[in-house]
Structures are given as C-alpha cells and as structure tokens.
Amino acid sequence: MPEITVGVANSISANFQFDPLDTIQFAKQSNFKLLQIYLNQSLLNDGKVLEKILAESDHFSDIFYHAEGQLNEEFVESVYRKQLYNFLLRSDDPKYIIHFDERANVDKLIRVVDTLSKEPVKICIENYFQLTGKEDAERNLKKFLALFTLSSNFGNAIYPVLDIPRLFHSNLGFTQEESLEWCYQILNFFGNRHIPMLLHLIDTTSTDQPRRDFTTIGQGVIPYDKIFGFIKKTRPKLTGAVLEFEDKINPLQSREFIADFFA
Figure (cartoon, rainbow, N blue to C red):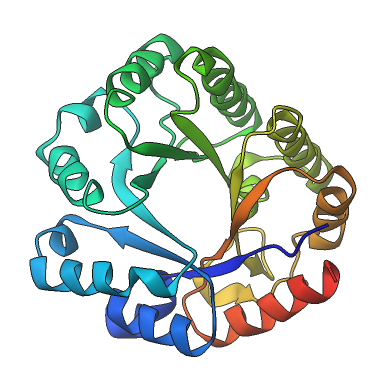
C-alpha cells in the first residue's frame, strides 16, 4: 500500500492562538506535506494573513481549509459562505471541509449540495454529532452515507472526511466493537466506490476525549492497530490524514507510528 500522506491542522498552534503562520512554519520545518487551516470569520477578515497563507501554498502537496458552521441552508445563504468562496476561488484547487448537520433532512441537504455544486469548489463533508446516544448516532451515520449515495447525480461535488476519534466518543453510546464496525462500514462504503477520503486523527486515553487526555496515535484507547490493519487490507482511496492535536510533539510521534505501520 502506498504511503499515507500525513499533515497537521492549525490546532497544533493552540499555544499561539491557533496562528496558521506558526503552523505553516512548523509544518515546513518538520516536512509535513498536508496542511489544514480553520478559517473562522476573524481569520477570513485578515487579508494580510490570507495573502501569506496563499504565498506558502506551494510548500505543501495539499491544503484543506476548514469552514465554520455546518452544511445546511443557513450556511449557503450566509455572508460568511460568500466570503469563504471568494477566498477559495483564488487557490489552485478550491475546497473546504464542513461539518455534517444531522438536524437537516436529506432532501434539504441534497438541495444544498445541488446549489453549492454550481461553483467550482469541492465540498468535503466531515462526520459530526450534536445529539447523544446510540439511536441518534446510528441515524446520523445512516443519513451521512445516504447523502453521498443520493448526491451522486452531481458527480464528485462532495467528498468525505472521516473523523475516526469521533466514532469512539463516549457520547455516542457505542461499545468499542460497535464503533469499530461503523468505522469499517464507512471505510468500505467509500472504498468500494473509489471516492477519495480524508482522515482526521488523534488518540486519547479516555473515551470522553478531553484535550488533556490526547496522546500519540497507537498509545490510547482507539484501536488504531485494527483500523489501520483494515485500511491496509482493503486499500480505500485516501487523500491523506490530518493530525488534529493541540501540541507539536504528538504529531511527530504519531506520524512515525503511521509510517512504521504502513511500511
């Protein structure tokens, strides 16, 4: 299996107010190929920083911008979305990540995708949970997969982002085996359709996943040995993996673990 391209999010610069320029400097020095930057309204208003980010883009094989909000009708109509698209269209490969909204029905989400797909911007939809409990979590995930099935008429306007740790959060009420089964099912769903998928990764020593319990991948409670073994066996099409830690040590050690596993 080809090497998985690993990157970092600007969450790693938490001690520097999540400064994307600090993240870029670290990523360049540490030879991370992927970059993810959360574009909140404050950053989107800062033209000078945005110019510096664009100027650094050639140093990376890919840059993913993470949008505020969730995929719904409110997002489509928002001033923020229009400002976001104006910025993204200045990049060579305009795309952004946005959280899935489990409260919206599938028909409305399809209309949202239909509207947004008229722009030459890729939408990367990340699994996200607002409600708690197993029943709502299962309904959420089924709706998430249904959106991709039903939106296939628009070509590849939308792409999946699989946040693996989120599937193992205690709020969902799944056993570890149930979380693992859902993880396998999602990887298979997109793998069988040859749809490229981005992974979001952290590890933690607690299923409640407070930030103080984050730890290097392979050292926590998320069964990455089984997940990575499944990926190695089934070979889904991966765009890469973004490490969403809030420090700079865990990403380095986690990248080493990933590289050794897939060597």
